[in-house]
Amino acid sequence: MNPTRRLPDLNHYLDRVAPTPLVPVRLDADGPTIWCKLEFLNPSGSTKDRIACHILHKAVRTGAVAPGGLVVEASSGSTSIAMALACAQLGLRFAAVMPEGVSRERRLIIEAYGGEVHFSPREAGILGALAGAAAMAEERGAFAPLQFENPDNAAAHRAHTAREILAQIPGGWVDAVVSGVGTGGTLVGLFEGLRDQGCSPRAFAARPVTGEAVGGAGAECCSFSGRIPGVVDGLSTIYTRFRAERADSLEELDVPDDEAVDVARRLLREGFPVGLSSGLNFRAAMMAAGRMGPDARVVTVFPDRMERYFSTELFRRAEPA
Image (tube, rainbow, N blue to C red; front, side, top):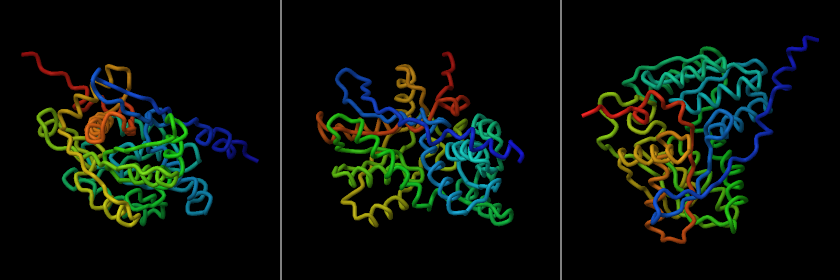
């Protein structure tokens, strides 16, 4: 027997990773305390490890993808990075289809894990990447996770992340959950999981609106938004899912981009190695807490780590006057 055939199993550690911490964070002395799930501490550096591990383990278990098989996904970054790492762990091959203009760091990380990176036209956005991934998967006989429509996306958070939060937060109760919306899997999954355990949380979807600090020339092109990477402007998909789950309501919070960037930078200075989506989520959580009162237990996630943002607005220095 060739001993290298056992290496993916021997080196596999994804099932042994401890739950990410849930910590109380306050940026201003008179500001609200927000409970933040430090998802940047997942192996690939983002919350997308949850769905990559959940979906790919199921695909391997059911035979949807064979050992050494190819996985193809459309993503602006974090999901592709998580899929690349998980495929490396599971002895699978991976190809990402990403819109032109995503940060160079993301491509380098995917390639470091042995993944392929293919670009779709920048102007076509996520729809172009989705079309490219579908065509590639069909042409090459690959497994397609289909994160935007796969119910296992939200199921990963429903089964794991939400239960971790309730086990970690004092008193085991959450009043509100807040998140930006990419695929919607995080917000839907957390809402469903918390409700399963007896909570009645309010769900807030954070939506970035154009400000002066980002957007325009020099903004990163990504599959969802040129302003806050990984966040969609439309919420039709998540509304459909919430109606299907008979949720009472989904509340939207408009967060100016410049405020999201400022909060992300403040979080960095407090020692949280986060990206722009964490700034969006935390600012929106502050707004949600303002609506609910000082005693409300508001939970959000810090979705990913800072290193995939080094060439973006987050780390761009202001020009001297």
